[in-house]
Length: 138
Image (cartoon, rainbow, N blue to C red; front, top):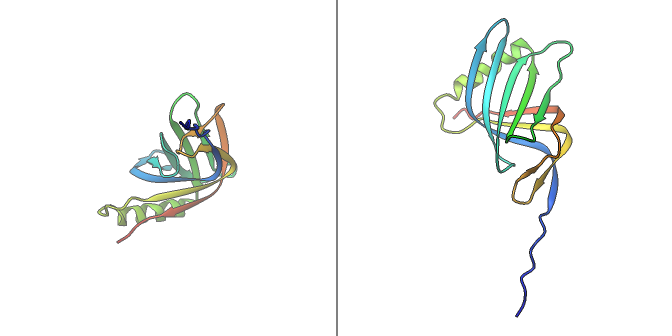
């Protein structure tokens, strides 16, 4: 009789976080703020809250990972004109069943198991190098 060998959990490094947007809210205070509630495409559990804010001189795109809850928070900064363009494109997508996809290229890699579970030892803040928006129109 052969014994089945348990496969060790293998971890891989990812440098891109892919998100599917579930809802979009607009907050108007002194400045324009777009809030997105997202789920992950390449990580199994958790959710992500993205805030798209107006760019300032010291603003840096960042991703924060919590260890005590299945949540990531992302801050993305764009010029005011780019924020307005994003809102226009989101409006074109409002009657579409296809979800908006956001891809974040990050400066440090995250460890994800082969089943998609994220490993985080400590709270972690990572710089977002680039943001890619995929907004279905038709």
